[in-house]
Length: 258
Image (cartoon, rainbow, N blue to C red; front, side, top):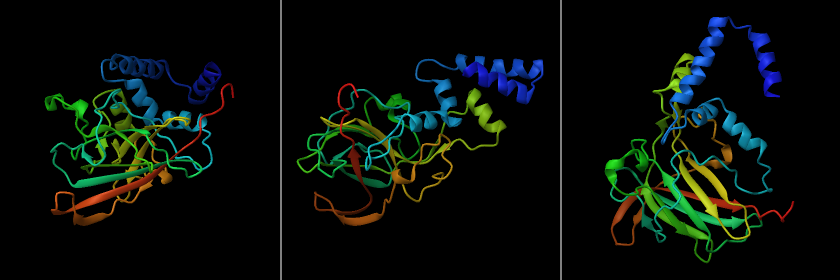
């Protein structure tokens, strides 16, 4: 199929030898840009909409299940375990954010003891793995839902941020006149016994680039209101924050062999 469509493309475009050589050079530079913490071909797949399409074609969600979204390049395998209401910002600057989640099965039954990994960027658009000077995990953690299927944490509002633009993909984006930005979002990975693991992203409403995500990952169902709230916190002081509340519905695991 790849060869068939490639030949059809070449017949349609009819590139000159110089143009075809330039295309090969682009792919070679993409390969040379890969390594360590960077995967230029994965980035290319994202900005061409292929990653989102592959996910959609392989996703036949149970009715009522939360839509999935890719984990992105900044997920880590073992984030620090934290109690509910912990502050993952660890003193980082930014507008305060409280995240409140409810994890259920698609039938509405709360899922107690679900494992919830959370990670996000800071107010400048950087993840902790991009800032080695921090020395430890920031703006990420692993939580467990309580008996009612709920989890909660304190953080700061994430920012929109650009994809890496210093390589071949950046040249492609510039050549096609596209902006490089991803809208602000918080990542979640939720695992519960007897259910399919959910990896997704939740996007605070009202931010820029929600209708033009450079990676095509925004879904209307994943956009949630984040109103400003003012009230009393557990230490008795009053403060203002943004509240991002979301219900995550997990599909039951498929029977073996299905």
